[in-house]
Length: 107
Image (cartoon, rainbow, N blue to C red; front, side, top):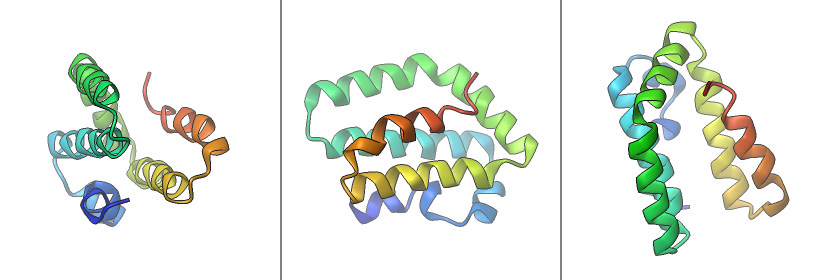
């Protein structure tokens, strides 16, 4: 995993993330997922990720608002850190559950 990916909100302390505006957290979340797709070096995946990001922006903004207002930012950040760990360790068997766990806030 490249250093740039770690410099998104997930590489920051959760306390720093909590001080960010929700639009900025959403922007960093989108960048995080885009970088994962780009790291796969699969143009089709990158295109699908970009499309899904645009489609889900309203619900993701609402989810980000709920996470920040509920004080769950630490858990939100931790779930994304787990994704990085699974990718870095190439724990392919853990990918489905890790991704599913990360949707806990998205309703």
